Length: 55
Image (tube, rainbow, N blue to C red; front, side, top):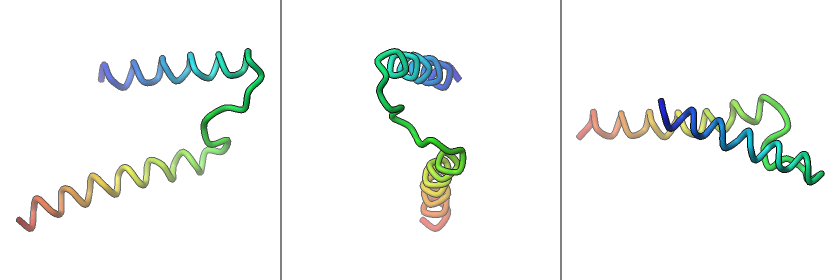
């Protein structure tokens, strides 16, 4: 949980910095893109679980 909180804080700091520097945000601009990234991660987790279950 500590890693998640640190990731959130660092992400927020990067977002604030980019806005102050008037740069485009280095993140997907829509929620569906964020869900897609989560889907890729979750798919990898499921694949590892299936691989461990088969072996």
